[in-house]
Image (tube, rainbow, N blue to C red; front, side):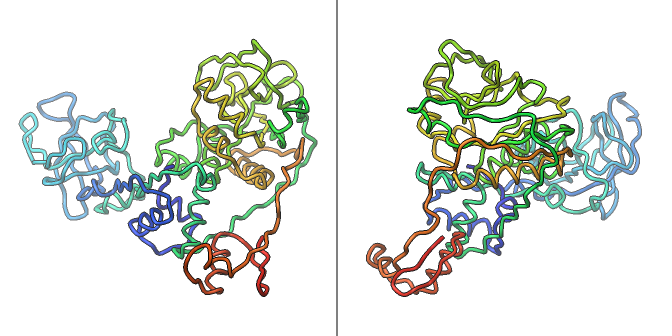
Length: 447
């Protein structure tokens, strides 16, 4: 499970350093396998600005640039096709270690002209694979500022999650544990329901035999029409790429974001590819599905699929289908949020050898109480980024029975844990976990 420091702080109000957080996570049983600070390798790099870019006197493909550093001017020879006057660039001066080579930069002659620095590409800084041109920084970047501060590079956590901690497969779950451990305050999660303005033309159904009802106990969704599935805003692309996910399109990025942020996988279908209503059912022997990874899979009666009136559209809890996936031309979508049986999901994934972030979470169990809130959060995010008009929610099934309140015996804490905890501290820990304790005498009620 990977997340950046700034992503964590979206949920956790804390003054703790990344190192302090890493130590506390390990103490909580969430082993930190790696804490990587990409800014560390950019020490010495600054923001430069090309003031002049002229042809090299001895080479047609090279440019001779005068670059402002905030403390003077340097002459830099550059072969990048996008080097031009006015551009803000990632500048290395002599003595700075170039990440891609591990060697210190030296001033030197390039085709008879002294080059006093280097303007870098993403590949040279190990920030990506792009090496066709130098990095183009925002126009408002301050000349002479440390490059790391302009790129907003975050420390990256990579933690190991044991199978019993499905709640920590989302950034908010990790933040909740840290808040309960006294390392900050869990910020409230704002959920603003979106009122639908029309009835969804796509209905939802659960079509299972009695012995397979647990395959999908709850399915909700809604139609959103008139969306624009373009590029995601920069903040969303930065957060996804910061943990190694490639931004694809706004709709796909939103679903990936919610999966990582809240441990809640969901899916969007292109309504143009949906025939009739959508239903969760068991697959049929001989049925085939071409998944989003481009591979075609043979299905059988042990697997759950999401289908329309004509064919299977997705492997429930595992991966969507290519034929019903969203594209740049998508304008109307159906948002699906559902509960799927962990055992059946795991068995399907193993049988077909399909790995996905959705499968990883569903087979460990997702919060059954978070289906409707997740639908509202995803809806809000879609209309804010992609626009569109929202239908009312459609629902099939009911959430599994859950106990809304538990009886908590403070006296048993010392008997089970082996040490005394002040009752006020118990209350603070419970509240840090997002619980609402009602204090009594020997028994508290905790929701």
